[in-house]
View 1 (spheres, rainbow, N blue to C red):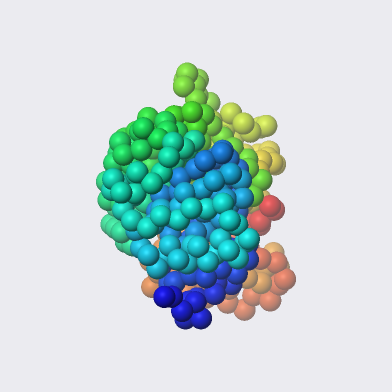
View 2 (view 1 turned 90 degrees about the vertical axis):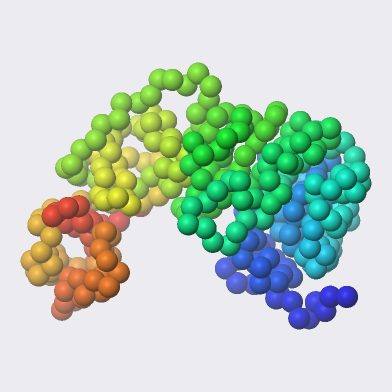
Amino acid sequence: MINFNDLIHVTKKKIFEKQLFSDDDGFRFATPWPVAEYRAKRLKCSILADISCGIGGQTIYFAKECEVVYAVEINPVKLEIARKNCQLFGLDNVKFICGDALSKNVIDQIPEVDIVFSDPARPATEEERNISKLIPDIAGVLRAYSQKTEDFAFEVPPQLPPHRIPFDCEMEYLSLNGELNRLNLYFGNLKSCIVSALALPGQIKICKKNGDDEKATMNYTNKAGTYLYEPDPAIIKAELLPEFLKNLTSKADIFHIDHKRLMLTSNHNIKHSMIKNSYRVVHCMRFIPQEINKELKKRGYGTVLLRAEIAPSMYWNIRNKLEKNLKGEKKAILFKKGELAYICENIS
């Protein structure tokens, strides 16, 4: 028996819509509720099987949208936590099954379903995320449940780029509040395009479909215009920058700040829901901290957010030089590109 008083009652970070029971591991890999809600609405059907359900964070939302949900989990403790969490939401349409999702015993307990969803376990850390390290593996689930349905959805590590997904499926890169959060794979009738980028909240989506061979002109520049823009990270990871550029109301050029930061620049103030941050370029000068400090004082800045490819051991040393004796009210965002510094203000 599980003593639920010994479990974590999750409240922090607003990962869940309401307080849920969890263990440490379950909390670490839990699906944020806006993501769980979105996926449940996209996969709404009569009967769904949720493979590797964990503590039930996603199962809850499937049960809200579907008539019947089969929740499978190999860990009996997590399964009982999932059962308890479904009870907290007053849900009684979930059938819980404990066991290996690829075993005959478990498969025989699941009838024909509309959709199989799987959020496989993965190593806590890897030098490079590898789709072959997921348990249960995607190919195994597709084979094992091929007689149950032709429609599958999987969650896999979002660090995987499209060219490392060896399946015929839709690859949906999803961001939450401007941060890359999930990668969903959709098979069968669930596939609506080749690759997509989705931003939550708001559900703004950029897609690439079969036959979309016409690309926007990709212009690169080493000189910033009046404005700098950070595209949503889901667009970058999905490699959909050409498709995104075609959606903009004004022309923008690609502006590489450094190895980590790809931005867009334009002389036009562009608005788009999948632009994470927008900046106005105030001044450009050589990256000499003492000279930049003088310029910041003259322009009335009080704090500086340094966005640069700098060794962590040097960051605060440089930032302290930049902010020395600043007394203004304004906040500057400072980008370093090579030997140049761009003093900017956030306008988004």
